[in-house]
Amino acid sequence: MMTDEQKPVRRIRSFVVRAGRMTEGQQRALDDNWPQYGLELKDGMIDPAQAFGRAAPLVLEIGFGMGDSLIEMARQAPEKNFIGIEVHPPGVGRLLSRAAEAGLTNIRVYCDDAVEVLAQCIPDASLETLQLFFPDPWHKKRHNKRRIVQPEFAQKIRQKLMIGGCFHMATDWENYAEHMMEVMSAAEGYRNHAGEGAYSPQPEWRPVTKFQQRGERLGHGVWDLMFERVD
Image (cartoon, rainbow, N blue to C red):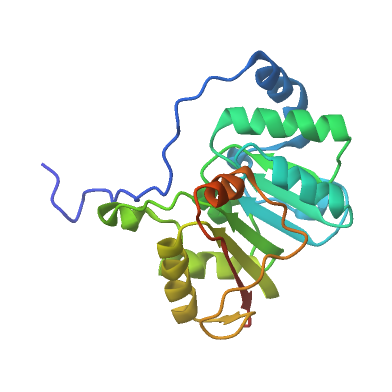
């Protein structure tokens, strides 16, 4: 019988893989375009310059959903490289379809757990920006522990950001915005772009997402937080 010390520690996940069927088009896009755009967790640590065939500022987005805003950002900033991470295959299929249609060459994709991808595949001090837009708010109090923005996570991604790099968050849940602000304001090695305790205005280059549009229709506000790695 295992003792408590021998039992493996089960990590609390910040996401649930939703039941969603792939359309034929999404599956075809995934099959046809994964060799060009896909990155695999099992392949381990990447060399970003090799993965993209060039050296360029690197932006990573966790949880891109159906990918519309990530595609738009990659289109608007061809001088940057973008990596998207999403656990839901239908969203990955849609993003690959749109990336191929647009002929984008500055985007790569993981279909896996972002925490594992960050730990195993992304080099330290390699990211100019890490984006987390409208993550699951886990709004029931008993589920708050599942929120991805926690003190341990803040330090894990700090390692991946270059000095001067930015962790950019956005949410339409005020309670989660307050939680993010509390965690990040206390996190070692960061500085709030907007000043202590202040939220940032939505930058022009962040597209309005469907999550944001839905939240605004429901009367929710939207809060952006931008924290810079200072050491």
